[in-house]
Length: 121
Image (cartoon, rainbow, N blue to C red; front, side, top):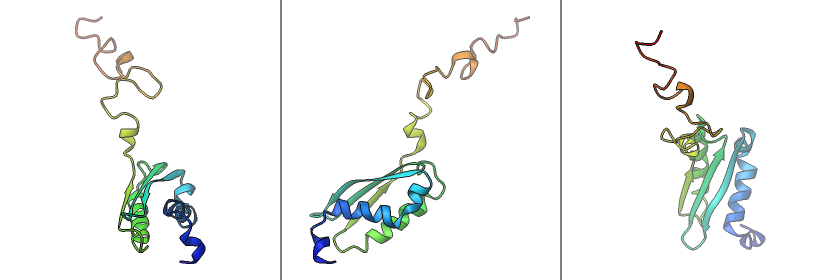
């Protein structure tokens, strides 16, 4: 590491690494954010989002990030999180859809009026 790099905070160096060495994240509509970069403990937490949520190769991307950053002498522990898209949308228990429409309205989610029963003509 050169003298000028010693003056750059760890968080900023990790962000630059992600931008420079992991362009696939942005190319696929993903985002990355360094949530924690503690030079005292060597702990780094990165969160991937956008197109990374639900992506089939997100595990490979996180593995590549972890493998590289663990070679940095100042990093002892790395966590790369990729939110589950179901968590982002509220999961199956969410009462309303993204558009604010009740999922059961119009018989889309329960028996309601779209299944009138055997006595219906």
